[in-house]
Amino acid sequence: MAGQIPDLHAEARTGTGKGAARQARRAGMVPGIVYGGEADPLPINIPFNKLLKKLKEGRFLSTLFNLKVEGQEDVRVICRNVQRDVVKDLPTHIDLLRLRRTSKINLFINVDFINEEEAPGIKKGGVLTVVRPEVELNVTAGDIPESITVDLAGMNVGDIVHISDVTLPAGAKPTIDRDFVIANISAPSSLRSAGDDEDEADAETAAEE
Image (tube, rainbow, N blue to C red; front, top):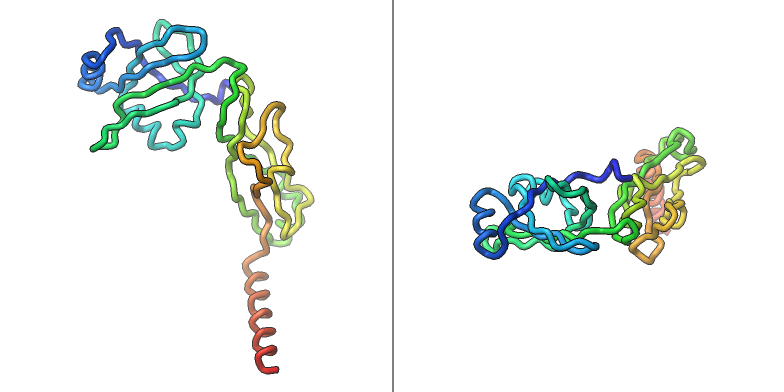
């Protein structure tokens, strides 16, 4: 949803070319360009420290941002390239692509698990093992889901949740073709240990025979 899209603050850059870019870097900014959509390219500067923090948070290239530039209308963007210093590996330039509401993009969407208390396997002491806490989906920029939901009601020990078991929002589809696992309910460690002991006993008996 729009309210969940993080803001990315920037300021319009008046000059263009290498000289203006160098001046921006000396002032603690990272120069960039916003392009695409139905508007002209917009040169921008982003505070170095704020950009570096977002980069360290991970998945910057697959995160949709609400770009806020003073004097400009807010616009949804996604990063298409971050140029880095070859020695220090720090950002030196950023390219942002404007998105229409109808644009299709790949984003990681959180997975919510509900009704754990109604899962017989968990009541028996089973453990919910989450393989994918988020799933990469191809979605429409104007209709991004906050999350997808996995209903655990009725699940027993040994049951597995695949992506095909989940009802996805209209227009969304996984970026991976295969029917991958999202989560499962595994046996309690005590039961697994008991099972291992029985396996070892059976193996010893077979060896004696």
